[in-house]
Length: 424
Image (cartoon, rainbow, N blue to C red; front, top):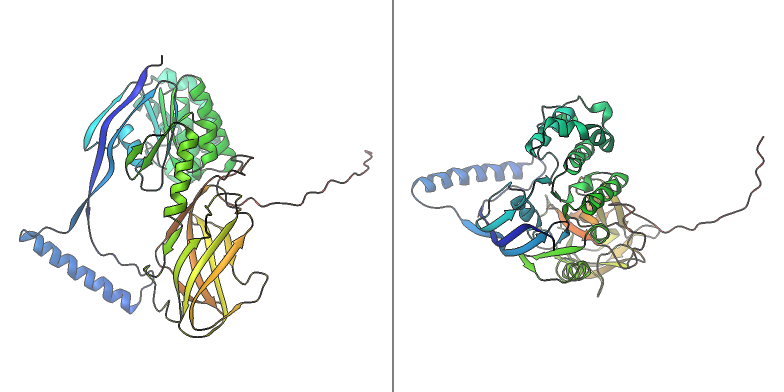
Protein backbone atom coordinates (compact mmCIF):
# COMPACT_ATOMS: atom_id res chain seq x y z
CA UNK A 1 0.00 0.00 0.00
CA UNK A 2 1.32 3.48 -0.91
CA UNK A 3 2.41 5.85 1.82
CA UNK A 4 0.21 8.82 2.72
CA UNK A 5 2.08 11.97 1.70
CA UNK A 6 -0.64 14.56 2.44
CA UNK A 7 -3.20 14.32 5.23
CA UNK A 8 -5.74 17.12 5.68
CA UNK A 9 -8.11 17.17 8.66
CA UNK A 10 -11.01 19.62 9.14
CA UNK A 11 -9.19 22.37 7.25
CA UNK A 12 -10.88 25.79 7.20
CA UNK A 13 -9.78 29.23 6.06
CA UNK A 14 -11.57 32.46 7.01
CA UNK A 15 -11.06 35.93 5.60
CA UNK A 16 -12.41 39.19 7.01
CA UNK A 17 -13.91 41.41 4.29
CA UNK A 18 -14.28 45.13 4.95
CA UNK A 19 -17.00 46.68 2.79
CA UNK A 20 -16.10 49.89 0.99
CA UNK A 21 -17.65 51.70 -1.94
CA UNK A 22 -15.33 51.83 -4.95
CA UNK A 23 -15.57 54.00 -8.04
CA UNK A 24 -16.26 52.29 -11.35
CA UNK A 25 -15.91 55.14 -13.84
CA UNK A 26 -13.14 54.53 -16.32
CA UNK A 27 -13.07 58.09 -17.65
CA UNK A 28 -12.32 61.31 -15.79
CA UNK A 29 -15.72 63.03 -16.01
CA UNK A 30 -17.29 65.64 -13.78
CA UNK A 31 -19.52 62.93 -12.32
CA UNK A 32 -16.46 60.76 -11.69
CA UNK A 33 -14.63 63.62 -10.00
CA UNK A 34 -17.62 64.26 -7.74
CA UNK A 35 -17.83 60.54 -6.91
CA UNK A 36 -14.14 60.44 -5.97
CA UNK A 37 -14.57 63.53 -3.79
CA UNK A 38 -17.49 61.97 -1.94
CA UNK A 39 -15.57 58.71 -1.47
CA UNK A 40 -12.63 60.66 -0.03
CA UNK A 41 -14.98 62.37 2.43
CA UNK A 42 -16.54 59.03 3.39
CA UNK A 43 -13.10 57.54 4.04
CA UNK A 44 -12.22 60.52 6.25
CA UNK A 45 -15.48 60.17 8.20
CA UNK A 46 -14.86 56.44 8.49
CA UNK A 47 -11.45 57.07 10.04
CA UNK A 48 -13.00 59.57 12.48
CA UNK A 49 -15.68 57.01 13.38
CA UNK A 50 -13.02 54.40 13.92
CA UNK A 51 -11.18 56.69 16.32
CA UNK A 52 -14.44 57.00 18.29
CA UNK A 53 -14.74 53.23 18.62
CA UNK A 54 -17.22 52.70 15.76
CA UNK A 55 -16.21 49.63 13.74
CA UNK A 56 -16.46 49.63 9.92
CA UNK A 57 -18.79 47.13 8.26
CA UNK A 58 -17.08 43.74 8.14
CA UNK A 59 -18.07 40.28 7.02
CA UNK A 60 -16.59 36.84 7.56
CA UNK A 61 -15.92 34.88 4.40
CA UNK A 62 -15.05 31.19 4.71
CA UNK A 63 -13.06 30.19 1.63
CA UNK A 64 -12.82 26.60 2.96
CA UNK A 65 -14.88 24.78 5.57
CA UNK A 66 -13.98 21.50 7.28
CA UNK A 67 -12.11 20.01 4.33
CA UNK A 68 -10.60 16.56 4.93
CA UNK A 69 -8.82 14.13 2.60
CA UNK A 70 -5.72 11.98 2.17
CA UNK A 71 -3.36 11.80 -0.82
CA UNK A 72 -1.13 8.80 -1.39
CA UNK A 73 2.35 8.72 -2.88
CA UNK A 74 2.11 8.69 -6.68
CA UNK A 75 -1.48 9.95 -6.81
CA UNK A 76 -2.43 12.31 -9.64
CA UNK A 77 -5.10 14.56 -8.13
CA UNK A 78 -7.29 16.97 -10.07
CA UNK A 79 -8.95 19.68 -7.99
CA UNK A 80 -12.20 20.69 -9.66
CA UNK A 81 -14.71 23.40 -8.88
CA UNK A 82 -16.20 26.69 -9.98
CA UNK A 83 -14.52 30.05 -9.50
CA UNK A 84 -14.69 30.86 -5.80
CA UNK A 85 -15.01 27.21 -4.77
CA UNK A 86 -11.75 27.41 -2.77
CA UNK A 87 -9.32 25.69 -5.15
CA UNK A 88 -6.58 28.32 -5.08
CA UNK A 89 -6.98 28.81 -1.33
CA UNK A 90 -6.49 25.08 -0.80
CA UNK A 91 -3.32 25.08 -2.91
CA UNK A 92 -1.92 28.06 -1.00
CA UNK A 93 -2.52 26.24 2.27
CA UNK A 94 -0.86 23.06 0.97
CA UNK A 95 2.07 25.13 -0.29
CA UNK A 96 2.37 26.87 3.11
CA UNK A 97 1.92 30.29 1.50
CA UNK A 98 -0.87 31.05 3.97
CA UNK A 99 -1.93 29.57 7.30
CA UNK A 100 -5.24 27.80 7.98
CA UNK A 101 -7.77 29.27 10.37
CA UNK A 102 -8.51 25.83 11.79
CA UNK A 103 -7.50 22.26 11.00
CA UNK A 104 -4.30 20.33 10.34
CA UNK A 105 -2.12 19.62 7.30
CA UNK A 106 0.55 16.91 7.41
CA UNK A 107 2.92 16.72 4.43
CA UNK A 108 5.66 14.19 3.86
CA UNK A 109 8.28 15.27 1.32
CA UNK A 110 9.45 18.33 -0.59
CA UNK A 111 6.75 20.45 -2.25
CA UNK A 112 7.27 22.49 -5.43
CA UNK A 113 4.42 24.86 -6.30
CA UNK A 114 3.53 26.81 -9.41
CA UNK A 115 0.51 28.87 -8.42
CA UNK A 116 0.74 32.22 -10.20
CA UNK A 117 3.11 34.14 -12.42
CA UNK A 118 5.94 35.50 -10.30
CA UNK A 119 5.61 33.17 -7.32
CA UNK A 120 8.98 32.06 -5.97
CA UNK A 121 11.21 34.18 -8.23
CA UNK A 122 13.22 37.26 -7.28
CA UNK A 123 12.59 39.84 -10.03
CA UNK A 124 16.06 41.43 -9.78
CA UNK A 125 17.89 38.11 -10.19
CA UNK A 126 18.59 36.50 -13.54
CA UNK A 127 17.03 33.30 -14.77
CA UNK A 128 20.23 31.44 -13.93
CA UNK A 129 20.34 32.83 -10.38
CA UNK A 130 16.66 32.05 -9.79
CA UNK A 131 17.17 28.42 -10.80
CA UNK A 132 19.79 28.03 -8.06
CA UNK A 133 17.71 30.04 -5.58
CA UNK A 134 14.65 27.84 -6.10
CA UNK A 135 16.71 24.69 -5.83
CA UNK A 136 18.16 25.88 -2.55
CA UNK A 137 14.66 26.67 -1.24
CA UNK A 138 13.69 23.09 -2.08
CA UNK A 139 16.67 21.87 -0.03
CA UNK A 140 18.82 20.71 -2.94
CA UNK A 141 22.60 20.95 -2.98
CA UNK A 142 24.46 23.01 -5.59
CA UNK A 143 25.70 19.80 -7.21
CA UNK A 144 22.14 18.45 -7.53
CA UNK A 145 20.97 21.68 -9.17
CA UNK A 146 23.91 21.74 -11.58
CA UNK A 147 23.10 18.19 -12.63
CA UNK A 148 19.60 19.31 -13.68
CA UNK A 149 20.55 22.78 -14.93
CA UNK A 150 20.92 22.10 -18.67
CA UNK A 151 17.70 20.09 -18.74
CA UNK A 152 15.78 22.94 -17.07
CA UNK A 153 17.11 25.55 -19.50
CA UNK A 154 16.36 23.38 -22.54
CA UNK A 155 12.81 22.69 -21.35
CA UNK A 156 12.11 26.38 -20.63
CA UNK A 157 13.52 27.48 -24.01
CA UNK A 158 15.11 30.65 -22.56
CA UNK A 159 18.79 30.10 -23.41
CA UNK A 160 19.21 33.59 -24.87
CA UNK A 161 17.74 35.25 -21.77
CA UNK A 162 19.33 33.09 -19.10
CA UNK A 163 21.43 35.97 -17.72
CA UNK A 164 18.66 38.59 -18.00
CA UNK A 165 16.80 39.67 -14.82
CA UNK A 166 13.46 37.87 -14.81
CA UNK A 167 11.59 41.16 -14.27
CA UNK A 168 12.16 41.73 -17.99
CA UNK A 169 10.66 38.36 -18.97
CA UNK A 170 7.29 38.12 -20.65
CA UNK A 171 4.61 36.23 -18.72
CA UNK A 172 5.10 33.26 -21.06
CA UNK A 173 8.87 33.14 -20.44
CA UNK A 174 8.27 33.47 -16.72
CA UNK A 175 5.90 30.53 -16.65
CA UNK A 176 8.14 28.35 -18.84
CA UNK A 177 11.08 28.83 -16.50
CA UNK A 178 8.98 28.51 -13.33
CA UNK A 179 7.43 25.24 -14.50
CA UNK A 180 10.78 23.85 -15.67
CA UNK A 181 12.32 24.57 -12.27
CA UNK A 182 9.35 23.16 -10.32
CA UNK A 183 9.13 19.97 -12.38
CA UNK A 184 12.83 19.14 -12.81
CA UNK A 185 14.23 19.75 -9.33
CA UNK A 186 12.74 16.44 -8.16
CA UNK A 187 10.12 17.44 -5.58
CA UNK A 188 8.17 14.60 -4.02
CA UNK A 189 4.98 16.65 -4.50
CA UNK A 190 4.30 18.93 -7.49
CA UNK A 191 1.44 21.44 -7.21
CA UNK A 192 0.34 23.27 -10.37
CA UNK A 193 -2.48 25.81 -10.64
CA UNK A 194 -4.21 27.32 -13.70
CA UNK A 195 -1.09 29.41 -14.39
CA UNK A 196 -0.22 27.14 -17.33
CA UNK A 197 -2.96 28.89 -19.30
CA UNK A 198 -0.49 31.74 -19.82
CA UNK A 199 1.70 29.57 -22.05
CA UNK A 200 0.98 28.63 -25.65
CA UNK A 201 -0.71 25.36 -26.62
CA UNK A 202 2.55 23.62 -27.54
CA UNK A 203 4.14 24.40 -24.20
CA UNK A 204 1.00 23.37 -22.30
CA UNK A 205 1.12 19.94 -23.93
CA UNK A 206 4.81 19.75 -23.07
CA UNK A 207 3.99 20.55 -19.42
CA UNK A 208 1.24 17.94 -19.28
CA UNK A 209 3.66 15.38 -20.65
CA UNK A 210 6.25 16.31 -18.03
CA UNK A 211 3.69 16.09 -15.22
CA UNK A 212 2.76 12.65 -16.51
CA UNK A 213 6.44 11.63 -16.31
CA UNK A 214 6.66 13.00 -12.77
CA UNK A 215 3.61 10.97 -11.71
CA UNK A 216 4.87 7.80 -13.43
CA UNK A 217 8.10 8.21 -11.50
CA UNK A 218 6.17 7.70 -8.25
CA UNK A 219 5.90 11.34 -7.27
CA UNK A 220 2.61 13.07 -6.45
CA UNK A 221 0.96 15.65 -8.71
CA UNK A 222 -1.85 18.02 -7.67
CA UNK A 223 -3.35 19.89 -10.61
CA UNK A 224 -6.00 22.61 -10.91
CA UNK A 225 -7.34 23.41 -14.37
CA UNK A 226 -10.54 24.51 -16.09
CA UNK A 227 -9.56 22.34 -19.05
CA UNK A 228 -11.43 19.14 -18.30
CA UNK A 229 -9.65 17.26 -21.09
CA UNK A 230 -6.32 18.02 -19.42
CA UNK A 231 -7.75 16.80 -16.10
CA UNK A 232 -8.94 13.60 -17.79
CA UNK A 233 -5.55 12.99 -19.40
CA UNK A 234 -3.40 13.62 -16.37
CA UNK A 235 -5.37 12.80 -13.24
CA UNK A 236 -6.56 9.53 -11.73
CA UNK A 237 -8.48 10.96 -8.75
CA UNK A 238 -10.42 14.14 -8.00
CA UNK A 239 -11.15 16.50 -5.14
CA UNK A 240 -14.40 18.32 -5.94
CA UNK A 241 -15.12 21.61 -4.16
CA UNK A 242 -18.40 23.50 -3.87
CA UNK A 243 -18.41 26.79 -1.96
CA UNK A 244 -15.40 25.78 0.10
CA UNK A 245 -16.63 22.28 0.98
CA UNK A 246 -15.23 19.10 -0.55
CA UNK A 247 -17.96 16.80 -1.84
CA UNK A 248 -17.50 13.06 -2.13
CA UNK A 249 -16.99 11.80 -5.68
CA UNK A 250 -16.03 8.30 -6.81
CA UNK A 251 -14.15 9.21 -9.98
CA UNK A 252 -12.78 11.97 -12.19
CA UNK A 253 -15.80 11.63 -14.50
CA UNK A 254 -18.27 12.06 -11.64
CA UNK A 255 -16.47 15.23 -10.53
CA UNK A 256 -16.49 16.63 -14.08
CA UNK A 257 -20.19 15.85 -14.50
CA UNK A 258 -21.11 17.54 -11.23
CA UNK A 259 -18.98 20.55 -12.15
CA UNK A 260 -20.58 20.86 -15.59
CA UNK A 261 -24.09 20.45 -14.17
CA UNK A 262 -23.46 23.15 -11.56
CA UNK A 263 -22.19 25.54 -14.21
CA UNK A 264 -25.19 25.05 -16.45
CA UNK A 265 -27.76 25.78 -13.74
CA UNK A 266 -26.04 28.54 -11.78
CA UNK A 267 -23.79 30.66 -13.97
CA UNK A 268 -25.50 31.01 -17.29
CA UNK A 269 -28.41 33.23 -16.31
CA UNK A 270 -27.16 36.73 -15.58
CA UNK A 271 -29.26 39.66 -14.38
CA UNK A 272 -27.77 42.46 -16.48
CA UNK A 273 -30.29 45.09 -15.39
CA UNK A 274 -28.65 45.36 -11.97
CA UNK A 275 -25.12 45.72 -13.39
CA UNK A 276 -23.38 49.07 -13.43
CA UNK A 277 -23.15 51.30 -16.49
CA UNK A 278 -20.92 54.21 -17.52
CA UNK A 279 -22.35 57.62 -18.37
CA UNK A 280 -25.72 57.63 -20.12
CA UNK A 281 -25.59 54.01 -21.32
CA UNK A 282 -28.96 52.31 -21.05
CA UNK A 283 -31.15 55.38 -21.56
CA UNK A 284 -32.44 54.49 -25.06
CA UNK A 285 -32.14 50.69 -24.80
CA UNK A 286 -31.11 48.52 -21.88
CA UNK A 287 -29.72 45.01 -21.44
CA UNK A 288 -31.90 43.21 -18.88
CA UNK A 289 -30.83 39.57 -18.93
CA UNK A 290 -28.45 37.10 -20.61
CA UNK A 291 -28.91 33.36 -20.44
CA UNK A 292 -28.26 30.15 -22.30
CA UNK A 293 -30.93 28.29 -24.25
CA UNK A 294 -32.93 25.65 -22.39
CA UNK A 295 -30.98 22.50 -21.42
CA UNK A 296 -27.77 23.88 -22.94
CA UNK A 297 -24.39 23.98 -21.26
CA UNK A 298 -21.43 26.07 -22.32
CA UNK A 299 -19.16 23.33 -23.67
CA UNK A 300 -16.80 23.20 -26.60
CA UNK A 301 -18.34 21.67 -29.75
CA UNK A 302 -21.91 21.71 -28.44
CA UNK A 303 -24.81 23.87 -29.76
CA UNK A 304 -24.79 27.36 -28.27
CA UNK A 305 -27.79 29.68 -27.97
CA UNK A 306 -27.47 33.04 -26.22
CA UNK A 307 -30.75 34.71 -25.28
CA UNK A 308 -30.74 38.43 -24.54
CA UNK A 309 -33.66 40.19 -22.90
CA UNK A 310 -33.62 43.90 -23.82
CA UNK A 311 -35.87 46.89 -23.26
CA UNK A 312 -36.24 49.63 -25.87
CA UNK A 313 -37.48 52.97 -24.52
CA UNK A 314 -37.93 54.34 -28.04
CA UNK A 315 -38.07 52.92 -31.54
CA UNK A 316 -34.55 52.12 -32.70
CA UNK A 317 -33.45 51.62 -36.31
CA UNK A 318 -30.20 49.80 -37.09
CA UNK A 319 -30.34 47.96 -33.77
CA UNK A 320 -27.40 45.59 -33.23
CA UNK A 321 -26.76 43.38 -30.22
CA UNK A 322 -23.45 41.66 -29.79
CA UNK A 323 -21.11 40.00 -27.35
CA UNK A 324 -17.33 39.73 -27.27
CA UNK A 325 -15.32 36.93 -25.67
CA UNK A 326 -11.83 37.74 -24.42
CA UNK A 327 -9.16 35.83 -22.53
CA UNK A 328 -8.46 37.10 -19.03
CA UNK A 329 -5.32 38.71 -20.51
CA UNK A 330 -7.58 40.91 -22.67
CA UNK A 331 -7.18 39.23 -26.06
CA UNK A 332 -10.41 39.11 -28.12
CA UNK A 333 -10.98 35.58 -29.44
CA UNK A 334 -14.60 35.67 -30.64
CA UNK A 335 -17.26 38.27 -31.46
CA UNK A 336 -20.92 37.52 -32.15
CA UNK A 337 -23.02 40.31 -33.70
CA UNK A 338 -26.68 40.17 -34.69
CA UNK A 339 -25.98 42.02 -37.98
CA UNK A 340 -23.31 39.65 -39.22
CA UNK A 341 -24.29 38.68 -42.81
CA UNK A 342 -27.78 40.08 -42.28
CA UNK A 343 -29.49 43.48 -41.88
CA UNK A 344 -29.59 45.32 -38.59
CA UNK A 345 -32.80 44.91 -36.57
CA UNK A 346 -35.65 47.44 -36.44
CA UNK A 347 -36.79 47.42 -32.82
CA UNK A 348 -40.07 48.92 -31.53
CA UNK A 349 -40.66 50.18 -28.01
CA UNK A 350 -41.03 47.38 -25.48
CA UNK A 351 -39.27 44.36 -23.95
CA UNK A 352 -37.91 41.78 -26.39
CA UNK A 353 -35.93 38.53 -26.46
CA UNK A 354 -33.16 38.19 -29.06
CA UNK A 355 -31.66 34.77 -29.77
CA UNK A 356 -28.14 34.24 -31.15
CA UNK A 357 -27.52 30.64 -32.21
CA UNK A 358 -24.40 28.68 -33.18
CA UNK A 359 -24.48 25.05 -34.31
CA UNK A 360 -21.16 24.42 -32.54
CA UNK A 361 -19.49 26.47 -29.84
CA UNK A 362 -15.94 26.96 -31.21
CA UNK A 363 -14.34 28.17 -27.96
CA UNK A 364 -11.82 25.90 -26.27
CA UNK A 365 -12.17 25.21 -22.53
CA UNK A 366 -11.06 28.29 -20.61
CA UNK A 367 -12.38 31.19 -18.55
CA UNK A 368 -13.50 34.08 -20.75
CA UNK A 369 -14.41 37.67 -20.03
CA UNK A 370 -17.65 38.47 -21.83
CA UNK A 371 -18.89 41.90 -22.83
CA UNK A 372 -22.46 42.29 -24.15
CA UNK A 373 -23.48 45.57 -25.81
CA UNK A 374 -26.25 47.25 -27.80
CA UNK A 375 -25.33 49.51 -30.73
CA UNK A 376 -27.08 51.65 -33.30
CA UNK A 377 -25.25 53.22 -36.26
CA UNK A 378 -21.99 52.14 -34.60
CA UNK A 379 -22.77 54.10 -31.41
CA UNK A 380 -22.99 52.22 -28.13
CA UNK A 381 -26.45 52.48 -26.55
CA UNK A 382 -25.77 50.14 -23.63
CA UNK A 383 -22.82 48.20 -22.23
CA UNK A 384 -21.92 46.75 -18.84
CA UNK A 385 -19.20 48.53 -16.84
CA UNK A 386 -18.17 45.61 -14.66
CA UNK A 387 -16.48 42.47 -16.01
CA UNK A 388 -18.47 39.26 -16.48
CA UNK A 389 -16.80 35.86 -16.74
CA UNK A 390 -18.03 32.57 -18.16
CA UNK A 391 -16.32 29.21 -18.20
CA UNK A 392 -16.27 26.99 -21.27
CA UNK A 393 -15.98 23.32 -20.37
CA UNK A 394 -15.01 20.25 -22.39
CA UNK A 395 -17.98 18.73 -24.17
CA UNK A 396 -18.65 15.04 -24.93
CA UNK A 397 -17.92 15.65 -28.62
CA UNK A 398 -14.44 17.05 -27.90
CA UNK A 399 -12.76 13.86 -29.07
CA UNK A 400 -9.43 15.30 -30.15
CA UNK A 401 -8.50 16.47 -26.67
CA UNK A 402 -6.60 19.59 -25.65
CA UNK A 403 -4.91 20.54 -28.92
CA UNK A 404 -5.45 24.14 -27.96
CA UNK A 405 -6.36 26.06 -24.84
CA UNK A 406 -8.29 29.24 -25.25
CA UNK A 407 -9.26 30.67 -28.61
CA UNK A 408 -11.37 28.98 -31.27
CA UNK A 409 -11.31 25.80 -33.32
CA UNK A 410 -13.70 25.84 -36.28
CA UNK A 411 -14.98 23.09 -38.59
CA UNK A 412 -13.41 22.96 -42.05
CA UNK A 413 -14.22 21.54 -45.45
CA UNK A 414 -11.14 19.53 -46.41
CA UNK A 415 -10.38 18.37 -49.95
CA UNK A 416 -7.58 16.12 -51.19
CA UNK A 417 -6.67 16.14 -54.87
CA UNK A 418 -4.16 14.04 -56.75
CA UNK A 419 -1.41 15.82 -58.57
CA UNK A 420 1.59 14.81 -60.59
CA UNK A 421 4.94 16.07 -59.51
CA UNK A 422 8.19 15.43 -61.27
CA UNK A 423 11.41 16.43 -59.61
CA UNK A 424 14.03 18.08 -61.79
